[in-house]
Figure 1 (cartoon, protein in one colour):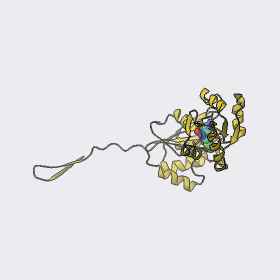
Figure 2 (cartoon, protein in one colour):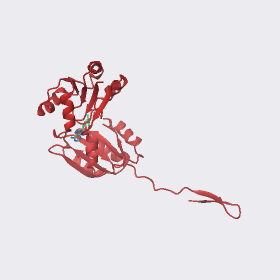
Figure 3 (cartoon, protein in one colour):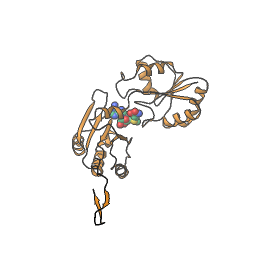
Figure 4 (cartoon, helix red, strand yellow):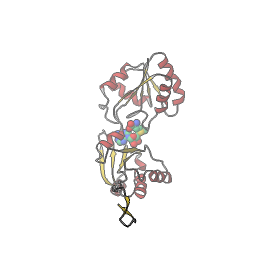
Length: 245
Ligand code: SAM
């Protein structure tokens, strides 16, 4: 049975694609790419000549039938996005759902994703994290989002555009308080940078520079309240209820 492969591609450094990912891109009958020009650069680097079609936010419904038809004809298909793992803040999940629904097999080919790459070197707790994708563009909705997650005891992870990083840091600071945080910029690229500190320190840093490139913002989670022993109630020798904490 034909397979849809969900193939992770580099988030900057073209060396960061797995040998298995390259083999799959070479062997499938069709690659559905978010931007064919972008993916062609990766394919050219590795001399891969597989047929490419565009699969992006604006044609994803129309393209669904083309991809289902290719699978029905017995052709394996690879889905890639411009960078990182498809379907993670990128087109893909509707296609994966439809392909599963149609009875075909979906196989993920793991590789880079900015959320995991940033977290892994952030220095913040990674045992629990809560991925928020891109926060809303308007401050009011962004603050509402931060209010929703204010009590979550997990590191919060967001993607943000360079021209909005300061506004997002300011809103996070006002709603969440001055928590430890980290910004990962231009991961795997020439100007890769981690800025670690509290939200107010990060805000001061980026207010003093002209933020450029791609950003992952990570913010420490709510600190858990100290564990209380469950209180127990008993009666003393006079028959009076006594509660101990
Ligand atoms: N699917 C991708 C993934 O798995 O990471 C994410 C795609 S999303 C449309 C693009 C956003 O991811 C960027 O705006 C930025 O916030 C983040 N990102 C992607 N590459 C990055 C990099 N090299 N360094 C830092 N952030 C990056």
